[in-house]
Image: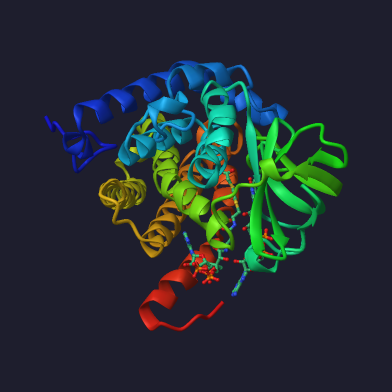
Length: 388
Ligand code: TGC
Ligand code: FAD
């Protein structure tokens, strides 16, 4: 009998350190025991499972790569990737929560914030007591954030923010928003607290995707914040883009988890579904589909692991992240749709995971840079010509 693991055909596990294996196993257990039993219902009802936040914090999953002096776990990039993979095996919405909290909110406070801001926010965010959201995208077009309309104007020792952000994950859950605004000195980031007069979050309804995640619009009507809430150590688009590089790196890993869940479901189903006197798994058509899924998952696993090793060595480039985000999300979306097909009619209900993953991945392929944006980043690298 074969000793190969069908969901790890190239034995990625053997390339992980002892600590990385422990992290993966702990998060896998969390997903199996705490996420999978409830997530179909959460998706149906359109609610994010808030109860899971303290447990995610306890496992060190919030800001996992930041230093222990701020109450974080100080793990490496590969461990962060494995966290994203195991969370997204549960649901993209759970991984989104961790991505936003870790890479888009805690990371900028750590990388661009003052020591006072770090001390004030990071330990509470690692503990899941303060939730963050990240406001970059605006209603008139997210792919081109350089053209943002939201602006902040100096007024004595304060700043006054006006504008709107759209499609903001965690918007209505968040205690603080990292808000990117145009200023006379270029784009700058501000920490805006919930309850600040003039700041309103409004949840987006009627979503068919990422239903177990909160998505909101943010509105700023003469919102006054002190200069101490400005992130002092970055100016320009490289501020938000630097956060996106962190989050996109995690998103290269996440969809591998979703794809594995779909392959597993399709394989099991096909072995027990008897048609024309034999399991559909015994047909060449289904085996070709399953084999192709395994091939694409294996390639994605190798891409993300190498990307993680480059990141841990301090050598990862944004173009490499774009290539892997594009490849791996496309891989998972195609697999989720194909797995849905193998399940026939049963595949259209949330009793089985493929349709939920397929619908979720429709967001994942759009957010953090659309597939086209990442293709054009790679094209620009090859040609030296900016085709945006
Ligand atoms: P360009 O004007 O050339 O560059 C501006 C400055 O930024 C630097 N830079 C980067 N730095 C770090 N990481 C990156 N990936 C970077 N890319 C560029 C660059 O060196 C330059 O620095 P400096 O010092 O010279 O000023 O900008 P560009 O032409 O590279 O950007 C164009 C484009 C289209 C790639 C960029 O605008 C883009 O990525 N657009 C897509 C926007 C996007 O992804 N939005 C995502 C919003 S957040 C989100 O979706 C969260 S979902 C979370 C969840 O729920 O999980
Ligand atoms: P647009 O930018 O209007 O793009 C429309 C179409 O035009 C796309 O197909 C795009 O690929 C294409 N296109 C754009 N430029 C070109 C070009 N030069 N050539 C060819 N085609 C082009 N944003 C945040 O800031 N924070 C969040 O937390 C967040 N969470 C999100 C959660 C969800 C569920 C979703 C769906 C989105 C979220 N986003 C968030 C927003 C997301 O980043 C944007 O949706 C994304 O960047 C695309 O922007 P857009 O929707 O305005 O589409």
